[in-house]
Length: 100
Image 1 (spheres, helix red, strand yellow):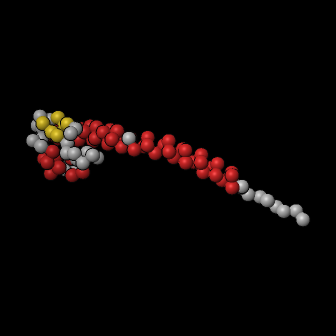
Image 2: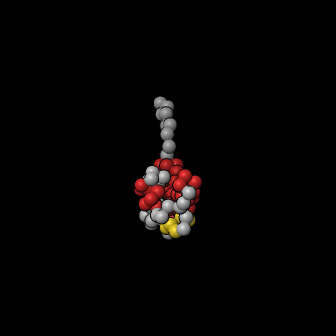
Image 3: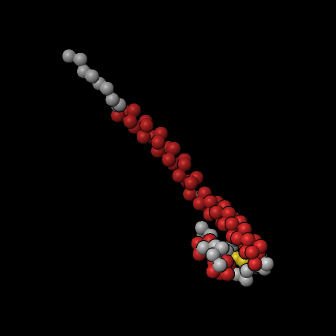
């Protein structure tokens, strides 16, 4: 009788698992170091957005707001837009928004 031996052998499965394991070992450490870079870029982008809202407030009112709380109360920014992704508060002085 003829047997139909379709499928993968144990050796083939082990080789595939080894290749996947090596790829994971190479990729995962690289992803862990990127979170700080992502947070820094996110903070820089947030500073740009809030600075644009400070400038819009200046154009509407003729003077710069005294603090970011004034922008929140005037609905130019939300509560979330005062804190960077790394949980640090944005700085503000003399019409300029600064990253922490």
